[in-house]
Length: 193
Image (cartoon, rainbow, N blue to C red; front, top):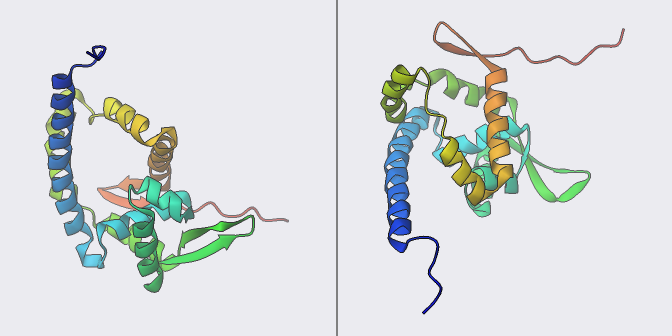
């Protein structure tokens, strides 16, 4: 007989099933709400996510998009190509990195992404409204530290670092006034003189 595992088989199955069931239920709600949000812009979830990633990274390799967007490389490339055809992204190679293809938001792409942000209505997001009782009780939304630890151990610390950086960038790049989201003024280049 093999050495007894320090983890119970029953406990492992129950944990895995519980996480799968809850994740699937949350994703189904998020997916439905996200699709409804971006439908007027003729975007699908992968395309919107790619625009968002390109915005946060201020240019991203296809492999960065695939990793951070949790999608296959071919999916990231194919949907990025569709966005390029619509004039929302541009593709380029960097002088010091000819192996990777990088995508950048065009002005049209950035404008469309910002327009989607402006049209966001929190009351139409089931997961958000479902979290309000927690916020009312504790004065803040759930912080997901345990979930982030799981994701970090599955996808690696770079994934979490990129996630946190994107949240910080969003916080810095936008302000809210009277319930409306406004981009922060762009930092202008220093002038000589």
